[in-house]
Image 1: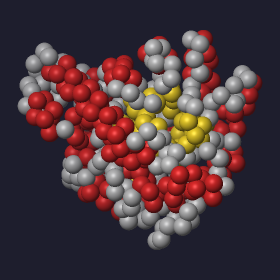
Image 2: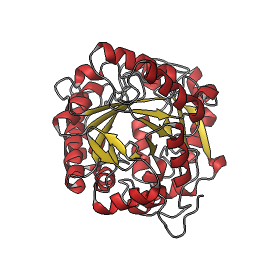
Image 3: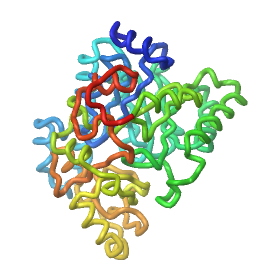
Length: 400
């Protein structure tokens, strides 16, 4: 950890996060795709002595040469998916190396891989081969992650879960394979952004997800198994102040994870217009719906999402299986649009998130958490956000 970050931590009254033998700031930057948290953001966060996370999905969008090789491909060609996947694996390697250069040996470089991806295992293997310090997996239970990473015992493995029941399932399955999670992200689906860890939108307010319930229940389970000292809990969702971090550490969490607050920093890999959509959104502009991945999701009600939600019942009534992915990418193992599942979303999520990355307000899908942002509508550096969360003075902070 850099000397300055050590001073911030010493003055904060907070405990450090101990992960993979490293002492870190108790702040984790969440993975955000498509392309929002790539090597630039993750490397900057890690350089400050925290955990920076690269979102693995469709990173070729950040590399003009890789997009030029794949954007023109005929989606009906038999090798189109393989060629796009190869470009994305090359992009992931580039972004991990970029992040490591920026980090200069500090912090932790993590890679977030959605379990729901069709190329999930390939992304995990590439992240391991490219030198990631940690693999974070959400959007499904990563029951097979210990096997995929068995040749990399020093890489931290971190599942994203939402309640004590999910933690028990994963930990007990991993224990049978001789491995424990190196940490667990406990993400509150009523507060977080993007894909959410609940079965249905109607379940988002279930009391079992509240941190004052979930954190003690998870810690009690770990204590019964005799491993409470081995697995730090990282609370995610709705965190915006130093007091939030202190409160969660008081409940027993080791650290906190933030997504949207990092997405709108100066070093975020998204376009300026993307950041403006997130910072200007009012509480009534943030809406929950069912994603094409079949999971509840939270995003800003932009023109595209407004129109989609209006047409969704009609589109779901007309849902039918397609012979192939309309984009040729086939990014999800199970896709509501491609597979014709009426209760799931009926749009191409990669296309809409790609528009958002570029700042296309009219056509993009802009994932966002439910909470307020530390600096209101201001776009500030990562350094300011970390200082604010650690209780250091930062001018013009909006929260608290």
